[in-house]
Length: 177
Image 1: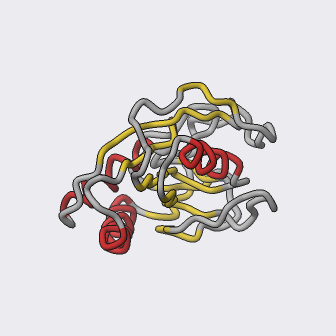
Image 2 (image 1 turned 135 degrees about the vertical axis):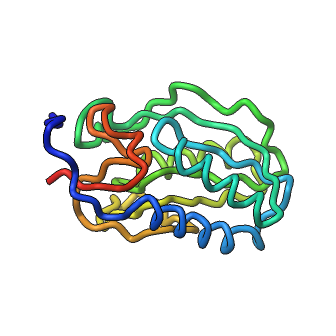
C-alpha cells in the first residue's frame, strides 16, 4: 500500500512528459488521418490520451475519440493474468484506423486485448501508442507501434499510473520502490 507521507521519486518532470507527448504526436500524425479513432484504455490511459489527442490536433490531425475500459490489475501491483472488459467501444470502427492509447505497457495483456478487440470491431488498421514501456512484457504481448518513453523496471505512478487507485493525477511520473 502507498504511504501518503512518502512522495514518489520523480523520474520525468511535467515538462519532460509534455515534450515527449509532443514528439510522439509528430511521429504519429503522418501515419493517420482525421477518420482515425483514438481508443483510450481506461482508466490509466485517460491522461495520456487527452494530451496526445490535443497534440495531434496541433499537428493538424483531428481524430475521433472512443474508450475501452479493461481491467487486469484491480488494486493489486501484479496483473491478475487476464483482462476483463468493463465497458466496450461505442463508436463504429469498420474500415477505419484505430489508435489504441494507453499509459503504460507492463505485462502487455491489456494492450494486446485492446488490439484484438479493435480488429474484431472491423478496424482496417490497429495502431498502438503508449507513454511508457516497461522492460518485461509477457510473451503474448504485442510490441507497441509508438512509445514515448522506455521506462525503467520500477513501480511507476503519476500521469495515469496508480498505486491502488492513488497518485494517478500527479502531473509527473514517479517511482515507488
